[in-house]
Length: 512
Image 1 (cartoon, helix red, strand yellow):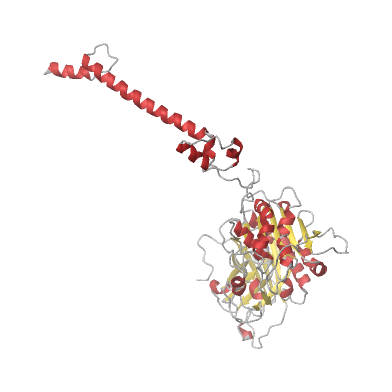
Image 2 (tube, one colour):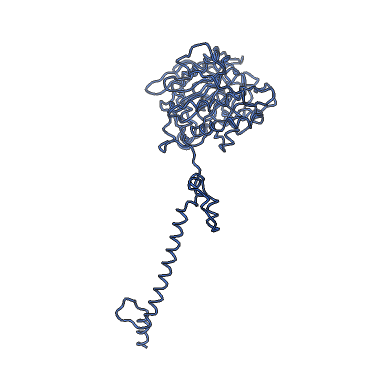
């Protein structure tokens, strides 16, 4: 038994052992043949891999099929093979340098294209003058014909659009100027300006808030295809045109590489969509042909409603204010001022802190059981009762529908204005703005007398409210959350002081 175990053990020993038997030679030979076969198989697969990955036919589907079938591949020239994209070669896209990141955009990298006409520019240039910064911004006002007046150094440069009579326009009772305006982004791109990240389209009766626009665009990579804006506030207008279209009056942004692609194909695209109404619909259609959807940013505002915008401006959504359109269709936003004066007054607060403009903060006076809604830089609404934040977030409908009918609906919830003047809130409007080491102080005063003839409460009798906010601007790259505030007694008769601050972790706004 011991001898058998030793023989069996020797037959399974190493082939390099000095003591081996004839049986161990057979074992070693079998191992050698198996290893040699495995090595040869791997080598054959490696050679085949090299042939496939380096053969020029890999970059042509037809040539690759001919190679597999064993037919002649000499008919495929090397130039045609190198120019045709194959199954493993991705098509090239227009990009800027690899160091382009979403955070390195400044106002200098944004170019505006403003749609106007020789007839309207004389009146509406005052709106553009409110927000334009000639030292740091670039842009052009595109007209339908030359103007005799000289170029102003404080406004964008005037340009005349190219002739568009060769394009078809078949929308009945529409305006052919839609074709001219739709080509503004492409014509601006063809000016070959350097260091451009974004092209912004807007109308001459639109007010932009440049620093807020910059904050919004800084979230996106300008080296990619982006079409940024939002649709109308009117359900009717969205149904007529498109829910997925950026309405041009409120403005929209197109990244540089997308503008480059649009400029290449837009003229042929315009003839395909001759039946559309407006310029923004044509741009939306051309970008759809390029496969680019709308990226919605709610801070762009078409403002498709009319009249007194007090209720809407006092309950702005929690997003940076980027633009306001249709200034001629709205009443002056401040009492006892014309529209230009009113927006000039608003921009006093914008210059102090553009990130906070119109941002709503809800406070409670626990002692007097009242509610205060602050629209920073614009107004303060004082309610003589405790109102839920959910209710105060909805605007009071002080405005009318765009078509002056009651058939339309808005894209947001509204609250009715009480017919009883004693149940309406007291409204105080921005009076002054001052900046100090402790923060920014905005003062709001009563502009109109009380309409309620009954006895006024202490809150209803307020004549002045001072709001202290931090010097630091809001960071819109963080998750959105309203600021909290504390109501303090004031040294001024019929006055109140409010201090804004970041809400604590888990803090509940409504008094419990």
